[in-house]
Length: 572
Image (cartoon, rainbow, N blue to C red):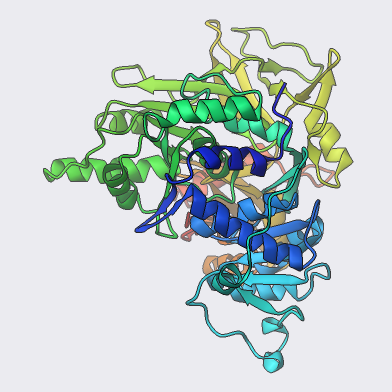
């Protein structure tokens, strides 16, 4: 049975044993466990003074770093619920999230100030704002107009809050709720609501199980394991490259801390593969978390160039690279393994649950793209809940056991669609498709819905279509995802212009970027005379994929789509 404790209590138990050891490193800054706990307790005291308590939602709109971990721990100490905010979101997207989660307080990076304030000014439940960085621009005046509207709540300074507030004393806690927002399948952020009892085994899979250690079942067992593991120093030194606002970054970070480890964050706010390689050498990192080729391909390029120049990076400490969520190609794995003796661990999982399947590749192995083994308890099933027959070429849905607590916040219909009961047991089925080979391995086939996974971010095709169609020069639009070596898929739009309109691809991309997060804007616009749809108006996706691929490849001609490419925002 999973540990029935609040995760703050769990981390406090680890921290009490490792008090003087460094928990988090961010560039040249560090926090010991004692410092991390003290600062989080001070922030918790301030939030408590603002009326934040059990079940209240606190949004965290920060980049990876020490302050994110302090904020997370502070919220958990209060038995409140942290709400992860995608820092790429535009104000309308933030506003939806703040309203959907009923956010009462927001802790945000100063560089996001304008967007956060615009959203917060229209979110009636928000009453507390805390700004982290000290280099932010000045607050806009009340007369600046609607675009720069200032929320009625005062904006507090994070350093001042920490410095002026006494630590909140520890208190008894129970099993509280955990909420993680994903890109959703409606284009809007969608919250996966569960409990800390669900979170503990998920995080343990990235810690104790990764080390081949038994998972402690009580706080006493956890402290005993912490003392034993700490005798060797840091059991894990983990560098999570993905943002903490996503499950991969968050769960690998919590996993390292849980298992007597240390976490190293990159300082760049956009992914820098050179900084990652240098940090591995400098900090003696043994575990790196990435998201498929979007991270791995630039890293392979950096390592290859350094080796060719006779200045290879020291990767002797590296034991494993973990990846979740995006295709990690065999060729890139081979290129990485040429530079070190570690394991490439590729996982199919989702914010809603899993893991569903795993693949491990070591130096000398025959690396294969999208070929996995089912994780313990996982299945590939059809719509009736029957197991897919190995070697049949039948494509089914990946399913993993799910508990009775997890579901989508405020969306019973979507919960029933994703969490299904077969044979008296509940299963999570977020829409990943796979077939089973005769040897029992599975081949991952992608997503069955119109969700485009690009660089680890989810893009709902219909949301982008709706924004495109709102442009006065667009008559119709269909958005699809085309394969991309680095990002997994790239957002591509087929557009039929209105008669007489001469709108350009760049104008349409700018139109989308003004309404949606940068990663949602099309990388390619393919203009066509007409779009093929069924009599009911549904897009002919088979035709659309072919037309988009032809257009994006530049095969323009009479009767063919014309093409215009645009860069995409994949700042990590």
